[in-house]
Length: 299
Length: 299
Image: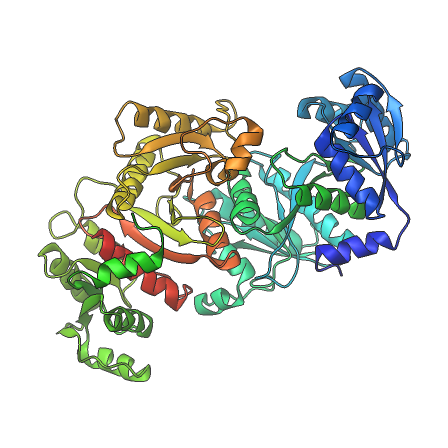
């Protein structure tokens, strides 16, 4: 089971390089990130976009493009669709956003005929490594589903479990987060959703995981907190995955971990046929690199 | 301006000791915390509750009760009301929960005739000190107001500003948090509230602060994040206060900071005539001590 990002990188080094298709690739940030994964020996890249501009962007940051295949397409939409097609046809394993807009890449991914979507919900998952906790923490959804319904939370949970499974954890412990550990039907609907998701885990409707909730963040990650509060839980204090009630709570968790706790962070979109790297320009170089690595591992 | 908890403790040491009234005080946790504040020379205590049980609890953890006044009352409700009365009548500066239930102490505080409430909203504020940020961070509301309306958010914001003012910051920078920095009226109502709170700050309807929002957590605390996202904000990257959209987001911020980022943490309830210390048993000894110190400073 992979417990750290170093272990994740090492397993990638030991396997055949996977291929990242970069959509509208004349983006210095994306080029630097994909170049680093190549230097680490864990990825190949296909750069789709206007060739001259890609070469110019690479020159700006002193990168050699020799290791990469370039597919010369000028138009943003056409280049993005081509990158998606490369993934759909199996020539690439991961889709990465370059300079195309988020809406352009998502509409190409969601296209019913030529896209990458199957029956599943698309969701954002983030993985963290922090000195205070002995293993990776996976959370969802910090960036994509705004106010998920119970049905959408099932999809979010299943996607996160699949990521943990692909990191070598056959039965991750999933904490469904609320502000409290008691069900409060009158005032806190997310505690009700949490109880239902737990029972769906117990009944085998959500598979390959142990699910418990509602749990507050301290209950999920601190055994001491469970003990003093008298919470008996198969997940409490040892969670692998935290499912957050909505995008505000998810985004708070993500940003506090990444910007104030300085946790090592990787974020990807899952639920399509292959993972999508859609980092923000404000993400650190390390986060961009780790996000590509995580996407390759779960592809 | 107080930038660290050590500075806060030092200013308390230099002034006359304030008095903490502990409600239903035969609680080893509360006794240890109040004893530590006494040893540090920053607080006196009045212990209200069953005298024999208070002495027994103190003996269990090896504490001397010599420095403390004991008011011998057996009944939970009567003892709690007496502790509230001591604060109301000016004999104590801070109210602290002992073994009485949260509902008992809050109903005594909220009693219209004999309580501690004036016109203001009660809210929970948390202060953090973390190596990655150069000053204390105050957030609200992580534990009391579940899904505040816009009007309640005004009260929450005013209470937090008053705390910062009493810590010596005459004009704190307030970030109203959402998952994004753009107003999204269709899908994210908290971004609308954030914009309104900002304008109320601009118009002087909320005083003694610079307010800006919506801002995501990274925008609030990272100048770099504002720069790369092109956000021009008088608050961005330098926030003193973060107002969270609801209890789930607030509780996530609080618990990630305290349990995973290992930030030094203090939490109190404000908005009553005097601050209330209502720590959780799962809080660390340091958090209990810092919470009393913060309450004394803002009382």
